[in-house]
Length: 126
Image 1 (tube, rainbow, N blue to C red):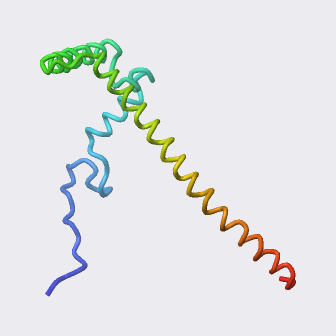
Image 2: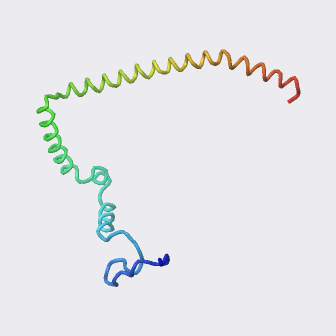
Image 3: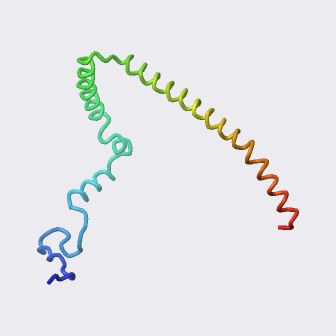
C-alpha cells in the first residue's frame, strides 16, 4: 500500500534554514547581498571594468586566432551580415507585395458582396 501523506524528514537543527523550510542556499544569499553593495556599473558589467576588459580581450584573442586559422576575416563577416540583411529585406518586400496582391484580388470580390449584403440587411430593418 502507498502512503500519499508522506513528507520529507526534518533537517538537522544545525543546518542553515532547518526550521523555516526551503530557502535559498546561504552562499546565494551572501552573493546577492554582495551584488547589492556593488556600484551599478560593476553589476551591469559583471565585475570591475578593468577585469571585464581583460576577460574580453583574452576571449577576443582566442576567437580571433580561431577565425584567422579558418581564414575568416572581419570584412568577410560584416559583408556576410550586410548580404543577409539585404536578402531578408528583398524577400520580405517581395512577400509583402505578393500578399498585397492576394488581398486586392480577394477584396475585389468580398467588398462588393459585403456591401450588397449590408444594404439588403438595412432594407429588412435589422
